[in-house]
Amino acid sequence: MELDKIKVTVMVHDPFLGTILAGTKIIENRKIETAATDGRVIIYNPDFFKDLKHEEQAAVFAHEATHIALLHPYRCYARNANPQLWNIAADYVVNDALKNCNKSFDLPDCGLKTENRFKDKSTEAIYDILSDECESLMEKIKKLVDSKKNEMEKSGSIVISIDDLLEPAKVDENGNTIPEINGIPTDVIQTIQAAQIVSQCSPADLVSKSTRALDSFLHPMLNWKTLLRMYCNDFKIEDYSWRYPNKRYEDDYLPSLCGETRPYMKKINVYIDVSGSISDKQLAIFLSELTYLFDDLCIEKMTIQSFSIGLSSKEVFTDSRNISSYEPDSNGGTEIMSVIEDINKNRALFSIIFTDGEFDNSPVLECRENIFWLINDNPGCSMPKGKTVHISSNDYI
Image (tube, rainbow, N blue to C red; front, side, top):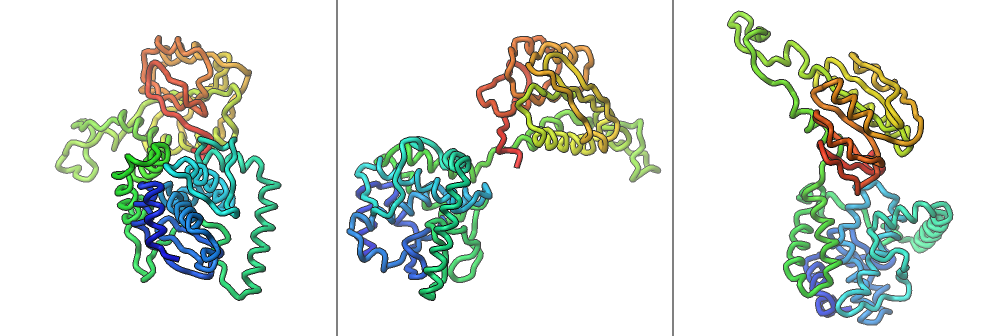
């Protein structure tokens, strides 16, 4: 097998994938069944390739290059996904992409076929669908794993992986630590960015997917807890005052931060939508975050109320240790007017509202105070006033 000719064929079919392959180290290893990648190198078994046509050989290497371009090994372990199930989901995405290249790649018959129901879906979305079908599918995977292990043990080979996605390595072949940025090796970043430069001749969909995947690692979005803490920090009382002595230099009576002798915040209000979409687990995590904020910001008083059709379950907390015991009432349905009226009446530094946003939000325009909206599983929801942060069920892990 001539690797140079294979690289040229992939480049002709798709310059983007050809550049990825040209910048990737390729290693021969007979201990694996076909070919695989850890996201940085490609490993292949020459015995598998010798019976394939040249076009099929090129397709297999293009397949592995697409896994690299879409950062599939890194996304798998960042998500803590089941490796075998993730590999199946990733293969659906990869093989669909290879069908849409400038010149379609001719995959061997042993490759996973595409399915119309997964067209235009992300690997994460396909993984979630497969997870719902998990019981029967995982039983098939287990049998496949066991059979592959038995075959390898009989032949005396060492099992590296029965799939084509390997766990990302932390050290290179010489035992040196691999330089990385936010979990992605710097040489992989450089290879993908170089490929993007020549991407004008490649399908826009594949290139954009690769760009988004890389950007999510290089510029990760802040999660809801971080955003909430940043919002709260904007309201910290950090003015210096001569009224309260600085405890470190009492004799010199230097100005001190007000917060060193009294709470940073007098009062905040919290409202929790209990109309049905927020699970007990999500509520418990949210209350745990409120406990952290109470102590971190030295809050003097936190009022928590649940709401659906009207307000209920009002409790005032002056000690963070009791917050996790809050138990809301649920009456079904949702209206926001009573919440806005309560915010305007019982003024606080700001209010936090945890909700799915499934209500008429026009009354929000009447609010006269600061609000942090935490919108659960409703990415299309937008509030006319206040700071809005979206959260999905997957963000609670």
